[in-house]
Image: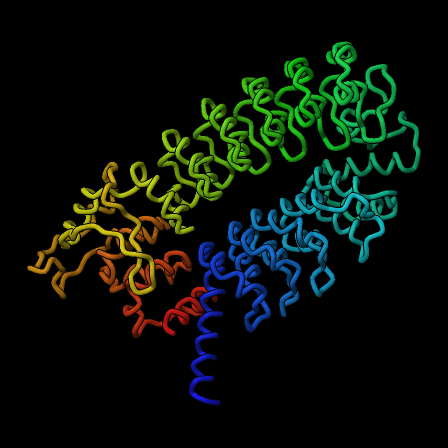
Length: 562
């Protein structure tokens, strides 16, 4: 092989390495720039960049790379399979429309894979994207029975309903087997529900149903308060009146047929919100407000997702503050829909709420790269942190979104005065702040010269040992500090703070003789490692990487070494 061929091969290898590394760390800008030439490239494991992004949980990168969908790696996984295995709900939501019907090489459908990895939320999402004509009762390898067993194990009533809705003819044998295997554990709600279903399949008389669930009878009634039978979808006369915009019947039935749900778990009010029947919503809101469907959705949330501002205004005071099964409020749904008029309407009464991961509407806006939504939400939610201690500005740093970092710095960033105080406390003279262009050799500190915010203080600030400063503004070699603010930022996963402090406090060691990069590696914090590598790579000389370090961190370090 000629020297020129070797150089070309090395350049290609480096190009591939940067491509996959960008997917792993969530660098959407790089991926969009090079996707035309790198699309469907695979690494030694047969993984595409889409698979790496899904495995790392970068939903925005998954969206950018979705043209690589439907490939299967050497491990037998699709990108959706990696998202399921990584418990990445957002990435799975992006991929389901593209790969929801693609089976892994092991023969597992995405639904069965979600069950295998105990991902009940993703399992519900699989049902939402399932072909309506699919008959689970005819599925291979006892698919329906496996779903029943998983639902019983979790006592997940909604999952049972999803499975039953996708059976053209319910297999009584599978239901009876599931009941017989689980009754030793006691009659849970799901088992009681299945007993009622089995009773219905065997045509027992209603009066002899000893095990039928009261919920089954009241939510999907055969006869409603003396009225005619419901239709095949469980819709009552009131619901059908809403669908046909028959206001006379709505008024006749609203008080006597209210608070029932159809087979999808929806009330007449929810149906009104979905189809935009504003008059029906105005009639029904006093009867059916605050009822939630199996996914926790309210009529207000349906109105938000449909973008109907008038309906939102009609329902707002009746259902404000309610959350769905993952803890999202109507405001968060409005942010995810990027509907500015509705966001402005809901800001008045739904800010400062957090979902079950601690995320706020502002954090959702940062994740979706919605500048105007962020601008509107900052006065209400700046400074709030999720359950990992991350602020909105840390999410902006996570995605290297400099536009949003600039927007958030005044409220959540480190001001010039605060930075100077931090540097002086560490024995460093504060240089003039500047932001170099982003590159490997010249890392980008996320701080602008116009930053103004309250100084950040903590109990850790009091733990630094007082040291003398030499003429160059650096610490004497023999100075020992208990810890540094940069190390504390790593402990707290404050990605923005790490980016600001790294150019000034890099390579300072604590009383354990460890740097911030060492702690980032020990704690398996991939984003912190990525930010710190350009500043503290030399500190890895003689450092032994622990065997339990995440493979992507090891690969990142090796790529940087090259």
